[in-house]
Length: 90
Image (cartoon, rainbow, N blue to C red; front, top):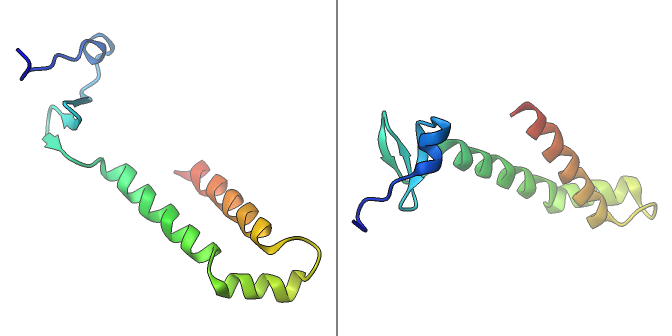
């Protein structure tokens, strides 16, 4: 009985895709350990963070902005803005 877990919520909602025993299950494709959409978004935002937090961007901001605002704070705001804009289109 413990081997088979029944997902009542997805039956009521009529969802074809759900999680079972911690694994992503699609009734058409079978088991998949990773949801590709989540993996691709993670890679995209990781690369965005790597670019915004790089020393090159820090140098460009520090030479152009100087003492108006703290550079790490500005990098954080830039990441938040880019995250929001990309999330709107995904």
